[in-house]
Image (cartoon, rainbow, N blue to C red; front, side):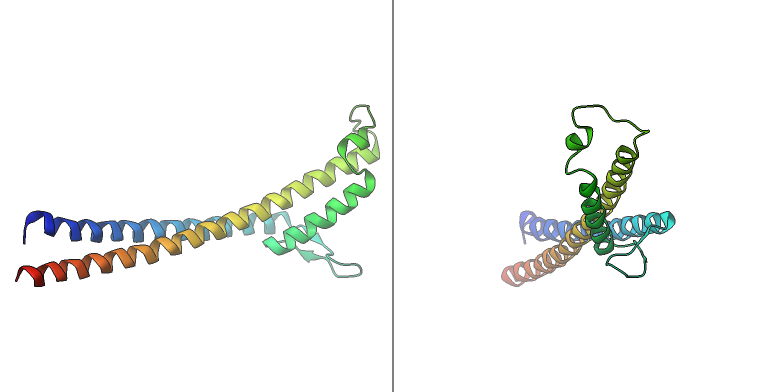
Length: 155
């Protein structure tokens, strides 16, 4: 078997191994960051009743953060539909209870939507890692099979 014929299967196998390693790094980072976001949300101890008359629940995952942010947005829009409507051509006044409530609501809403985004991103990274691992296994298997075929052909 010529050197070039031996090099191609070896390169495919090496690419497969690299893909598997990168895939495991992605999976590890995804799990670590998802745990970090969950721990940060738990440390804030944000509780909200997600429906009328329900017991307040701890916000610690994407679904509850999304539901809570949507409720807060609805309540904030009851104060004023937009920030410009709130100001009515004036300036923000922190001594005005409506302005202060609106600012606090938009802060909490953004915090929760950022959590939803973070959970979604960790899910995408996890999926990418799994695909990289599967691709690496396929590449490695292809390289091994190619090497075997080339050995048979040269024999």
